[in-house]
Length: 440
Image (cartoon, rainbow, N blue to C red; front, side):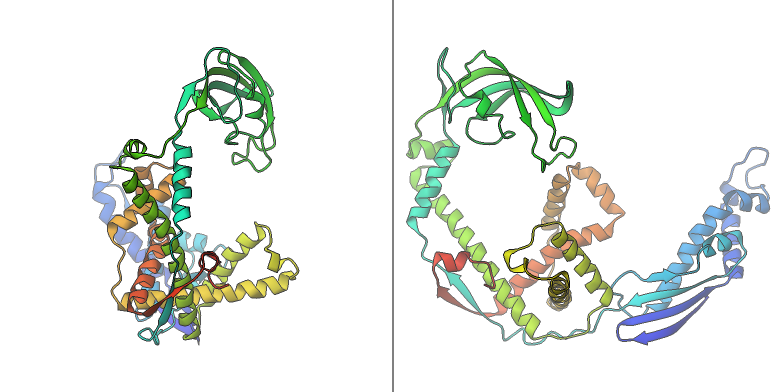
């Protein structure tokens, strides 16, 4: 095997790789001899099948494995003293692999590699940050309590013959069909429906206003064009609805009994829990401002060469999101070239900060606890609608996916580490200032 460096420019490297056919043939013969004792073929005693016959039978698959193995070895030799930024990219003439498998050619190709830059974090012991704080508005705590009471309303049967009105809760059975065919997920029994909640398809709830327990009604609706299930989006549907019960909301009193229904000792304990929740929301927003200021300082204080492939991949991901959404007000008058230039800078910033935070985290021995990673993996599985155990099986062969899930957790740990080291002063601000977009 010959691995020769042919290009060395900045972070880019190219290598000429030649893996002789004779080497591959030797390794193939050795592999065939290794498996021969285990092969049981009709007409041959165990271990007595001719090597030429085994080569014809198993050679192509084994040669494919050997090619991958030798390419990996070439990659290891080329990069033994380097840190690749991305997976090395082999470039070979079309049809070469087929010729190599047949034994008609050497495996000869060019390997393109981008390396990670050498990074020396600067000034991380001199970071200064402001922590935005506000005086917690008591009326907001009361508003949250009122909302909680609304969400936990009790309902009582309105009685025989009572008509359903806005705000009432119905218990219904329904069966949906499109063009006379019942569709999957369009039927259910014993479903609670609060009139006016707008939780069902537009137009569904309004047609049930005035119904009574025992009524059966046919409802015609059209699924929105942007409905989540693509096979239903924009389709006209018919629902056969049976109204089982009509209930009216009862009075909810904010007292100790209400708090006990929610598992707390009394109303003051509930009020304290609500206060913690509201405060936590403001603390999270305050951290977002600190994180933005921290990243700005890190970005301003570092300038190093970036792997072009990483920047390109980041830009393409950002641009795909831009093309798939409506433009912001500030972007509406910009040309595509102007927008691309803006998002190119954002991609460069993200890659620069990602590499820098990774280096800082490595130097500080920052780690993501396994329980946090497990929770994130389980959350990802639920988001994808997959069984958690099945998702773990997939991850066993896809360390890249695990790395993608871990990356944002690691970044937040590094940010926490830097905030703890920083010189932080508090600044009392208004609610509007705190809730503004970080950076504005």
